[in-house]
Length: 494
Image 1 (cartoon, helix red, strand yellow):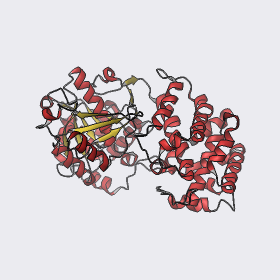
Image 2 (cartoon, rainbow, N blue to C red; image 1 turned 60 degrees about the horizontal axis):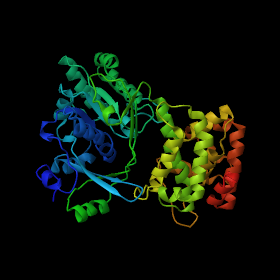
Image 3 (cartoon, rainbow, N blue to C red; image 1 turned 90 degrees about the horizontal axis):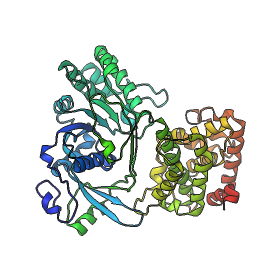
Image 4 (tube, rainbow, N blue to C red; image 1 turned 30 degrees about the vertical axis):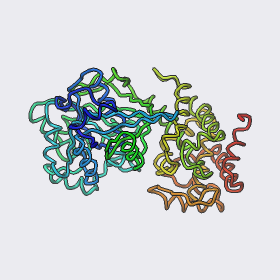
């Protein structure tokens, strides 16, 4: 049975379906960048809100800006915006539910004016984003807006022909301003620290070049709440699609798989109203910074702490790593001794329970999060997730052994290109060549890898860090047994 509105009642005989009348939903949110994460997270929260509280003003219109979004456009339109959310629990049980909060989907490359009109419509209160870090168009070194982007240059010269998210946002906001409508809130849901602040900085930089009066209005009137989002959502596989057909006789061309854990913390700062998502577990706060720091330093860094040595040892998935006692104890020691002391108290969060939950999440055998994915783009991840913890602990004389060991392991990983079983490592990183060149010089100069200043900054100014790193990297290269070294480093913890 094909998943669509026509077949929904029949599908409801075996699976939970939307109880609400989807045809009466108003589009309160336009979301740019509909992928797996948006559908497992924000769209799921809105579905629950509408399902449980009859909040019909908060339907979602999805938008794809690029030609690469055409497949999602085709699938969601064929399925009337419906899709199956497959929640996979650590004990092996699976829950399937049909989600109905996405009521329409537009492809901007086909109908740019329709997208602008949808954002400018009085019913639209929020434009939300999951466009990945690259979509924010900032220079990774300077943090400033990249005006050399050809699409940006085009839309600055031709404001009526938007191509990037900034062209669409300014076009829609200009139309709202001219129609004396309040602006929509711009809400980033990307996994970037201070995502709202970055969205604001980039949009204002663009708008000041294109239309300075509009930029002044945006600066005064538009809210950009920061938010922290969390739910592990692996890539959908053909096996998942086939299982739905075999078990439920349901043809869904793009279901979403996720873990049961879900979290969303948002600053309560909106231009034009918001959905009452606190009714379904979203936490609204005045400042999201402590929650961002907690997630980045524990979850995101925890992934790297498992993944980099895991790749060297030969583990294929994160659950393989965490089910190895040495790796599990090493990660928990890093979290307890190096991260927790610099986090402080966080309102509404029990840090010990949060860390316990991370261990449980990472061990979920159904969420086969590949080590190669976790290790990808480490040159962008580690300066945000791991290195700041070392820097803070150097200032406070806290522990740095585990985090420093991971940086040394990353050097070895970048250099060898093979795991300890002799199998090739799939290294995915925009700085792959620079990393390999620096790592290749390690045995001639044990600190050569640290000369990548864009990554390591001023860490080499610390004699304590350099000494710890040198000891770790020498042992890794000479012993070639990452697991044994991790166990030795922990000492009495075993």
